[in-house]
Length: 147
Image: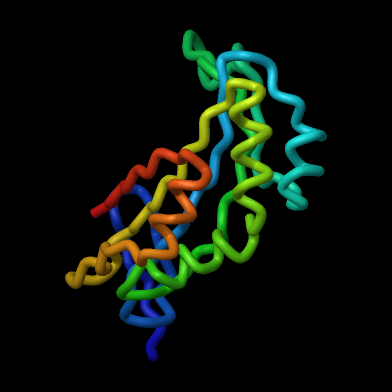
């Protein structure tokens, strides 16, 4: 293990290992108003981000939907599996969440963000458990790779 400051674009990362930085974002979103308190109660987890449709992003740009979101910690790894396990452990009642979201017309998206810190890209494969988890939720899965 080593420490090294690495600059990528306009960001400087302090690397404590030679692994990539991986984070997962779990978002429940809708064009219709979301009851953030009820979602927090159902998920049994405080959101790390919420925003309302119409919130200002920057001059002339506004949020297009309501969002309740939970973001995992940044994980150093050559593989996305530790991040997948973390989100499944934190949000561990997918049947209840799926039922509530379907009833209210909410959608679910899980975004996997990989920040390539070294020249070896993190492995991207999904375990059978994660695929079943997403299927129960009816979740869309996106992957963003930041080089």
